[in-house]
Amino acid sequence: MTTTTPDPSTAGNDWSRPPFEPGNTAAVTHGAHSSGIVDPLAAEYVQAAVDAAPYLALDRFAFALTAWARAEARCELLSRYLDRHGVQNNRGTPRMSILATLATSERAAARGRDALGLTPDSAARIAATIRDGGAALLSPTERRELLT
Image (tube, rainbow, N blue to C red; front, side):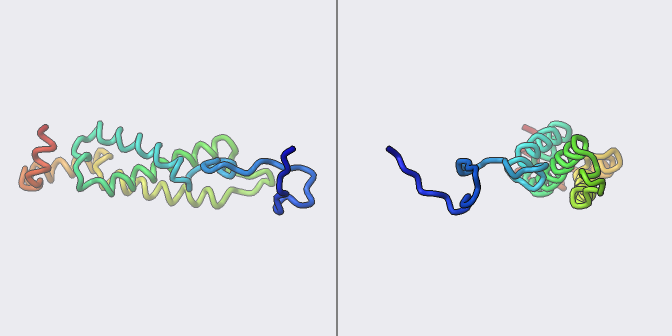
């Protein structure tokens, strides 16, 4: 016969559940604050951006590219949540925390798109800078990476 030690956190409850396993997502609502959810989606954004603009694969863009991709991923997750659950909660009040986080993430994503040349205007500015500065803008390592 196996005996178990009672869990003090369930004392007085008529029900019990097994402990949560590491990595569970029981408490996740939209996932925008979970690196385990944001990072894989952000990696997809990074790959799409590098496919569209190969210069973004250069090391000098790594931090900005990652920050932008994480902001885009948070926007997507928050937007999906609001699409499924609505802008108002079940009491009819706006989901202000989620809306504020979405607005902040949208601003960060827009700044990132502009800085990385992912909008028509910023792509034109980067092209002009490269045209005017030429290969002198790149380190020898970066020139090799772009040409291979």
